[in-house]
Amino acid sequence: MFERKLTAGWGDMDFNSHMRNTAYLDKSADVRMMYFSENGFPVAEFHRLRMGPVILRDELDYFREVGLLEELRITLEVAELSADGSRFLMQNTFYRPDGKLVARVRSQGGWLDLSTRKLTAPPDGLLAAIERAPRSEDFKEVPSSLQKGKG
Image 1 (cartoon, rainbow, N blue to C red):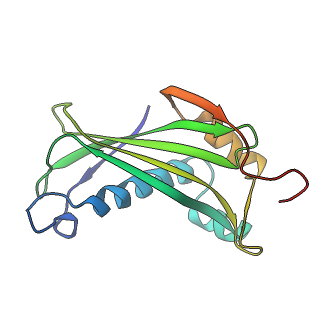
Image 2 (cartoon, rainbow, N blue to C red; image 1 turned 135 degrees about the vertical axis):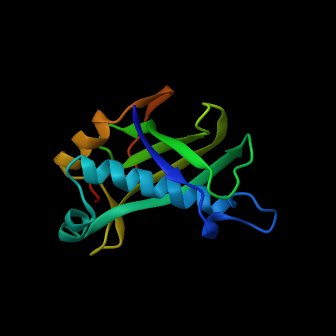
């Protein structure tokens, strides 16, 4: 399991004194990028390749409130992946230190070629890193996001 511990900070709070919805999305993105960095793809490598992850849809389910300075354990799993890696669904699950489920973020995305501004398949090393990531219990393979003959 890939997981990181993060803290709900001042800037993560909303008017009702609990963690705001976009803070969950930000922390999910941070954990995804930590995974890639620790598996051979730091931000500098994405810049060198002129490509990066692009999120097309986020889905967020809440189960418990999180307050200021509460510690969170956030896991990362791949829930969907195409054979060429061009399409993915990554799942981040948030827990309190006592193990209670707080929230779940599911982010559907792909890889953007920054030169052509079009979706692309990841290079072999990045695909291998995604394939090594933990899988969700409901993991499934999905069709490629690329049209045959186009990149």
